[in-house]
Length: 282
Image (cartoon, rainbow, N blue to C red; front, side):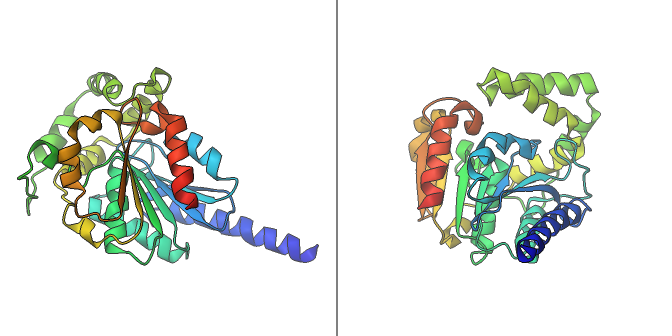
């Protein structure tokens, strides 16, 4: 009995330590840890979103897995950090895995979070076991222009000025109009708009600009682990272009949702969960 109590105290202390450490600006995100399974899952949300976007998903997995749900600095009310970049966030997540000795987690990322999952799998192959890319591409800009090349020096001043100079009402209306184009489930639209409004606008602008200049097409050739790519239903109309985007990711299993838009976890929940369960358990 004493051994059991001691073990329980250690587990609780470890969980509290993770929460306190990660919310003290040592990492570019806050983290919520649930579950106590041997296999760990790390969930990364997309632009402006809270980690709460994964609530319905983690409720399924936390019974048998340890779930780490991130909310990136500056998003959905989490305090921002200075000079955020896609690369610094990638390094921060990798460092978190190393520091807390999280053994071969599965990384599940939505939108920009999917981009981070691919980058981490390419640059830190020994840290993880699998990745799930949820409606993200190696290079979003190349979908419009296949000849796109990243700029060595990317000037983000214009978009930063545009987003930060908008009034609160103007920014709210902007988000209110854009979210329905990405999320068909009307019951979740207000929630996603609220996360955007609570986000630090400078962070949003800087990260959008940086990610728009990110090209992972060549880098994905370095990915060795299994990769499940879940794309929104509309993308099925662009299969040739998408196959070209993912041609270097040899381990990719690309699947298209049966309905809905960008937020697949909300718009095609049952299909999404079935895909994750099958992939994670393999």
